[in-house]
Length: 458
Image 1 (spheres, rainbow, N blue to C red):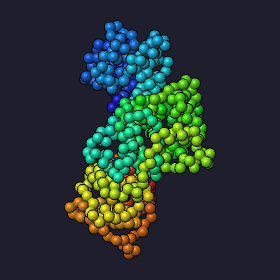
Image 2 (cartoon, rainbow, N blue to C red; image 1 turned 45 degrees about the vertical axis):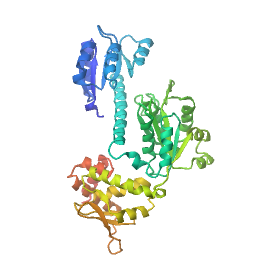
Image 3 (cartoon, rainbow, N blue to C red; image 1 turned 60 degrees about the horizontal axis):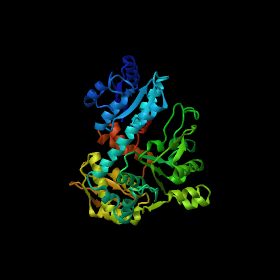
Image 4 (tube, helix red, strand yellow; image 1 turned 45 degrees about the horizontal axis):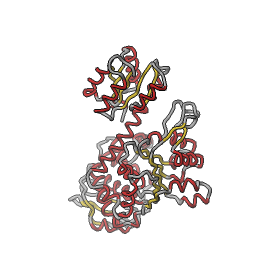
């Protein structure tokens, strides 16, 4: 969710404060409306439909807590931040118990207090909406379980048994076998109300991983200009997925072990002990027992994570699933790219089943996507590694195979192939760079950089 789509209702009987808060938030890019009583706030909810209400705790007539209780009875998805000049532990506890996400005292010492508090709510709602969108995708169209678990009935049975428990799950499997997707299925079936939060341990620098996992306090290290919540806080009442857990540094492993044992942690640079009820799903493509022998992975952590291990087989060991998965991917990609390709010709499927797919489902997806992107209106040349070149016939089916020969293959530098793919995609999207970047699987910034580079080299 973007700031310009995030609506905030400010409620206080002090008109000057309402004007000040509204001005600060509007400068940040939010949609803001101000009112001066709880009764007026409740009346404008249906028309304004705020994502967040910032309200004074004590007001003439309806109090802030009464307003929150009344709104949440009808609109539980609306979040609240309480403001009060009566700073006390009792007031804070009362507001938080009733459902407020944060509590600020007035007058504000620094506008950053307000900005940071609102940003936390925005971040939380964005995570929830992302997760809900994924859930709708899981429930719609071709039943995803038929695709995801094709030729993996045993794995599907395991997941159904463990999903609604609190057991920690450790997914084993090669890269590209769908560990992240399986983790999302576990979260979806668990019925948890919180967010699905993901962290790739291999993609995070060792110096930052603890901050990402546990958060940090303002001033904890150079660059920590404000307090930041970690992934475990974001995953409260939900699921945290730790991908490539075998790459986690030993220092972070010790803190993770404590969470598994005590469900407690501190932010980096902080002294306040926080608790989490997030369900942990971890994944690895490494042999953790070997890493234990190499002294790069804690043995006690391994046994804490390995409560319910699930092995995901590589695609080469479930080749009967290639047709189901391939057809689903072909239709999904074709619709997204705007092509009418509906099916594979039998010979194409045979060749796909003969290939071992060392990159597993990710490689299969990339091969089909590239073929669809480069498809002309009535013909496509699809390269599946070195195994086949396929041609599209006029009725939209991937048809007869063309065996590559040395005379027919034109060898080109990788950079030239990449440039042709980008130019072809831009042509098909009629120059729409954002759509082209999404299809190519790169960021808009990366696409713009490459186009600038091509222009400079002309």
